[in-house]
Amino acid sequence: MSLGFKTPLFYCHFNTAQLGSSRPRSQKHRILSVEPVQTSVFDGYSVPRNKKIRTDNLGKVKLNKDFVLRSKSVLTVDKEVDVDANEGLGTKRSNYDAIVIGSGIGGLVAATQLAVKGAKVLVLEKYVIPGGSSGYYERDGYTFDVGSSVMFGFSDKGNLNLITRALKAVGCEMEVIPDPTTVHFHLPNDLSVQVHREYTDFISELAAKFPHEREGILKFYGECWKIFNALNALELKSLEEPIYLFGQFFQKPLECLTLAYYLPQNAGDIARKYMKDPQLLSFIDAECFIVSTVNALQTPMINAAMVLCDRHFGGINYPVGGVGGIAKSLSKGLVDQGSEILYRANVTNIILEHGKAVGVRLSDGRELFGKTIISNATRWDTFGKLLKGETLPKEEENFQKLYVKAPSFLSIHMGVKAEVLPPDTDCHHFVLEDDWARLEEPYGSIFLSIPTILDSSLAPKDHHILHIFTTSSIEDWEGLSTKDYEAKKKVVADEIISRLEKKLFPGIRSSIAFMEVGSPKTHRRYLARDKGTYGPMPRKTPKGLLGMPFNTTAVDGLYCVGDSCFPGQGVIAVAFSGVMCAHRVAADIGIEKKSLVLDAALLRLLGWLRTLA
Image (cartoon, rainbow, N blue to C red; front, side, top):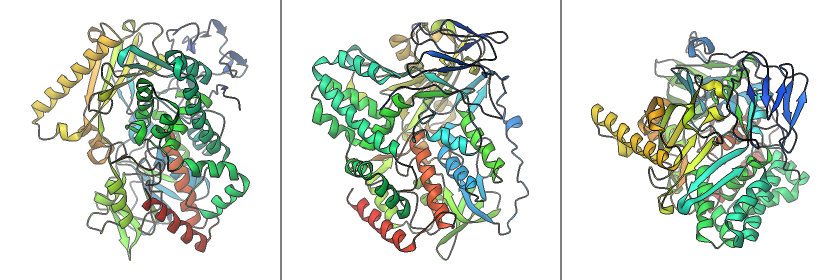
């Protein structure tokens, strides 16, 4: 199979941004740089404004005559989001096929996939903009991503480009910028590894660091490709829908059996089959930590393979104007399909009648009703808060025995003078300086995104954005007075900045033009996630993905979507969850084919498999 990538230029019909002039990174990895008025410059070539820029599978420039730059749209809440829309919704019974609680990527993908199938959907969002942890906010001329700036599933090839496919389904495309380096690792013992977009370049670099492990490196990542290729060969729909499953098995039996084989396995166990060097195995732990916030022994192999290969197959592609544009595009597409999204709609309860989920109650007292309810909240929030007082279903008890809430993050959003960053600075960095044992400890490792390396329009001229985050538990921030809380944020942020100044960017402290610090309490407040968590983390070594719940729940008419459902955390994973949820709901409301007998048998089988975890 070809691992090359042909760069797409996506056009979002309601929110595209002109690329400002950006500083070249290096001759090898120089990226799109557009002068505001006359021409754009790509790797030394002057490109007229009526040309479209594409790359071939080696990243070399191709030109297409219909390249168009659009003027920048300012991402303001008042202009982009009608927060008063749907204020007339009352308490009468509605004809919604599905009500979705929360507008994170998982919820929006589920909603839009249902809408394009003809379902009438209502999305309820507590905040004033969509996206959740894939949202954005603006301060002093900076457009900050709330969460990660590393976008998987955003290419124009294969079946795992789920963000692209979700946007296309509702008639919207976004212009993206390819990132030549997924992440630059800065690790103990001065180990430095760049994960290049080209797979052969990455393997060559890693093998050069560990020449005695070259064969093991090839075998481990080779197994990742087996899984990725199997996933990429299938039409991705609900694993809880038997007609689809049987159809896929008869069409692609080898691929289905491959995935079944790896379903109960973890990345760390497979890595240890082929590698012996402790430092190399620690590097694999760091690779998996970015995926799942746990080490390789606790990361399901299917999850690891999906991410470790997609970054080379489709590549990491950053949306022009910021990550928040994805959720805004999906929200507009949802409305264009005849469905609705209501902001400032804080759901406090899921309404049950005779044990079936039939509606929701908002904090202002309104009650809204639909055939099905989809919760994009975590399963802890869904069953602990939205269904508070109800008996916890046995399968949710089992889930909470197997998984705990992953830690939240301390996040630092900074604007700095561009001159402080070296010309060849990569967009994404992972820093763990001195001790491998600190990988999973609070504040032990640091992830840093600099999205203005790719899109300079996100910051004022001659400035860059630094988005820094490190794991932190909410317990570390509770019980403090306002004064002590603010003082602690400053102390922790100063320490993190000092580490980055020492390791990466000398003098960065004196270049800071803007800074905001968010604690786990901030994440809990704005994202409505219990303890600010970013998904489930296994209590002990899991059996791959066997213990992960799917979209259906023990409550009739209630479905879950997002990072606490199969296959777990990350943008590509929650998008997959949304696709699966939409298919299962569509079957249950009569839009897709369904077999009651086969459904019951499959759900019993899946329930039994989870008991083996």
